[in-house]
Length: 230
Ligand SMILES: [Zn+2]
Image (cartoon, rainbow, N blue to C red):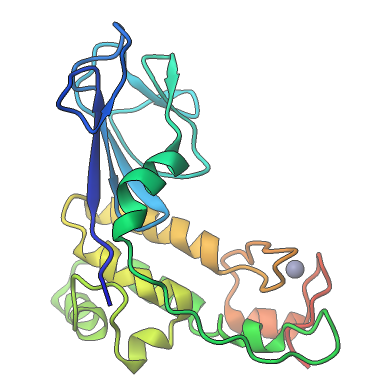
């Protein structure tokens, strides 16, 4: 299994960049984007003359996702999905999907998929706390839980796998040396919002920062009426 590799893409007017933009207002070295996971990036303005904006706000450095709009020098909008497929996708690991279990006749029966969310909220809370509270005890917990293979976000033992889709990226986030603890927290939060969602593909509503036990109590999705529990 190949690991996801942190990948930096340099953008600017100079010919040495990965992405060359022929526009006099773009600086020679304008910005760079580093994929921390397959969905979350660190954007850095590399001291450009006319700046970089995220959703209209000028930034020096920011954690971003595909939903954000990045514009260089108020003119050139970056296509993040295109950058991903050109520079990252070829090296990304195959994500091992669990085989789809046969569902009952009811098209709104998502009980099996819902169960996969069980450990996610707990892990999100524990990892976030451990990232922010830098005590030896927390760091030991992080290492014991996730650093069996610190550079291979996917290759977890049974414990990591129990955390579902989100578990597979925690190792990547923890081992990303470019970002500080609060940026790691933001990266994890973006991944959490992407994965702690209603399992109905037609819905995919973010379930909020609601503990799993409370969702169990709700039994079904308030929006799409997908059945989560009996
Ligand atoms: Zn739903």
